[in-house]
Amino acid sequence: MADSFFDFHERVAKQRASLRSPKPATGGADEGVEPLTVTQLTAAIEKAIKSGVPGTITVRGEVSNASGRQASGHLYFTLKDSSACINCAMWRDAASRLQFKLEDGLEMIATGRVSVYAPQGRYQLQVQSLQPAGRGALELAFRQLQAKLAAEGLFAAERKKAIPLYPSRIVLLTSRATAALQDILKVLRRFPWIKLMLYHVPVQGQGSAPQIAQAIAHLNRHKTDIGGVDLIVLSRGGGSLEDLWSFNEEIVARAIAASRIPIVTGIGHEVDCTISDLVADYHAHTPTEAAQVITRNWGRAGDALVQLTTRLDRAIRQNILDARQRLTAAERHEFLRRPLDRIQMFRQLLDERQKSATLALRGRLRNAQHRLTAVAPRLLIAAQSSLKIRSARLDAFDRQLQALSPQAVLNRGYTITSIKKTGQILRSSTAAKIGDRLLTRFADGETESIVQDSRQMSLFE
Image 1 (cartoon, helix red, strand yellow):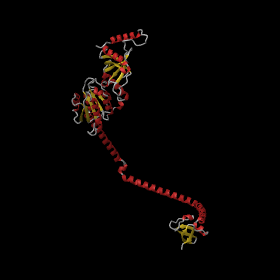
Image 2 (cartoon, rainbow, N blue to C red; image 1 turned 30 degrees about the horizontal axis):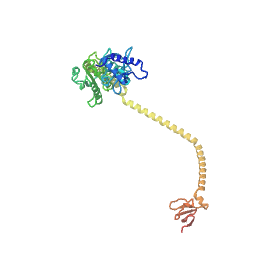
Image 3 (cartoon, rainbow, N blue to C red; image 1 turned 30 degrees about the vertical axis):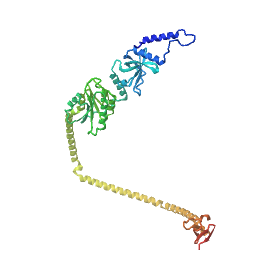
Image 4 (cartoon, helix red, strand yellow; image 1 turned 60 degrees about the horizontal axis):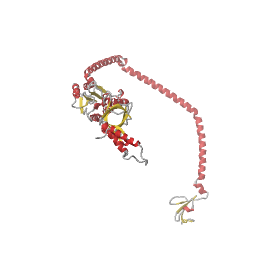
């Protein structure tokens, strides 16, 4: 049988006492006392703890140093009270079952077993389950998610979409086996013209929340493929907090917030309120109330139609009366009694306006002629002076051009020689090659020659 913690403590005390007794003069270790290795000592401590502490214990304390879930999925934190603390580790399998986020300051009841972590020489509590002290885990998870989404504005009234006044295409998003569906159909059967579509999803149990969220996203993506959707009714019957938990999942809340189609929720009984209700565009307390809310305008449509018909009839009668009065007044008007008088008056007015315009135009022409006659001599003198100046400048330019022209150069005894084939002017004797035919231009004609020597040219024969 394994030693208890107290037996181990007594044995270690005896070893310490023997170590403090006088040693031989040689300075060697006491005979018969074998020192423990660190591993042996740690194993002995772990063995003593396991034998002296129950296999499963429940501890209450305040959470501190919560590290959050690691990449491995494990959780590490500390439980403490006013006088002591203990390190805790919660492995991935147990941590994945937590419904809430572990935060510093939470009062927790932890169940697990004590073990020794040899690499750092400390004992710790391996936690197998965690429950909030004083309230349930689901309630804590609800409060945490509610605070998170409220801070993001998902519950704000200004982001909620208006419910259609007269929805004619409604999708019932629920399970076909629920009493909630029957409650809704009892109300909607009174409106046979409404097109109803059932989108079956599980509304309870593991994996139901992702399916509800996927259904909402699917309806938004394919609403035109099914002829359009005016409204989604998300519902289920009553139940415990655990039964309704799918509607408290964050994935469902965000799917409702992202929906472009208005969503009305009717979940549980009147006292129930889920996260989905808080995010929805309208929160009905029961499935029956949800059906009544979305059809309330249809229920009053007959009375509204009668009122509209009465108002329309009254408006038409008033318009007819007003039109008759205007027609009577028009019939009495002098213009309608003698319409040609009015036409003749406008014809005469048009003639007078045309005569006035003609006289005004003639007057302006006479004034323009007088002004032109007055300035004509001055304009003629100015034009003649400008013409003389420009003619003198043109003659000067002509003389300059004649002096610089090639013909003037030729007249002074010079010649211009070019290659006959290309027309290139020879400016150097090296530009001509033996055999090239050359044209030499004089003032009174041209001669042709062939290059025999680049340094000595003879006339072409």
